Length: 266
Image (cartoon, rainbow, N blue to C red; front, side, top):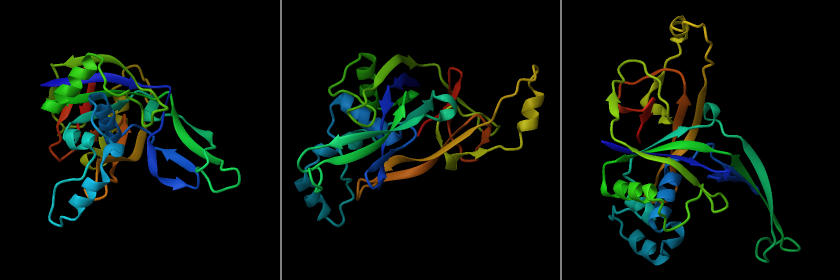
C-alpha cells in the first residue's frame, strides 16, 4: 500500500461558498475534497467547469433514463480517488480577512459609472498535509506529476489569485490499518457521521499524564463539500470534524497510521 503525502500551503486561499450575502462572498474554513480534486485536475491538464460544452450538456439532459453523470472532466476522472486532509493550522482554525475590490469594467454593474464593489473573505496563511491513497491509474498519475514537480496548469487554492505551494513530497509505503473498536485520536478531518466523539474520557486521560501536563481539548466542525450532484453539479456537503479528543466507531471504518498520525481516507 502506497500513500502520497505532501504539504499544501499558500499566503491566502478562497474556497467560495455557494451562498452569497449581497456582494460579500464567503469561504469555507478549510480546503475540501472537490476543490482538492480540482487542483489535481489542473495539474494533470483536465478540463473544469469552463470547458464543459453547453451543447453536450443539453443533449445528455434530454435522455430521461441516462444515468451517466454530467460532470467536469476533472471530477469525472478523479472522483474515485481517496484523499485525507490534515490541517496544520492550530486547532484546524485558519484566520479569515475580508478583501474589497473595485470591478470597473463597463458591464460589471448597472449603477452609474459601472463600478461594482465586491468583497471576498480570504483564508490567511493556510497549510495542510495532504494524503492520497495510490490504488488506481489516476492516483498514480497524480503521484507521478507531483513527485516530479510537473503541472499542465498552475495549481491554486480555490481561485487563481491564490497560488499553491506544494512541498515536503514523499511516498510512504509502510502505513498500516489500526483497529478502531477502541478509542483513538484521528489526526485529520473526517466525516462526522463515521465516528462518535468520546466526552467522558477526560479524567482517565489526565490520570495518564505523568507530568500533569494539561492538554486543552478542541473540536472544529464544518459542513464541507464532499461530492458533486450528478444532475446539477452543485456541491453535496457533509459535516466534518477535526479534534484532539478520542473517537470511536462501529462502522468498520479503516483508519490508517501514517507516521505518527492516524488518518481517514474518504
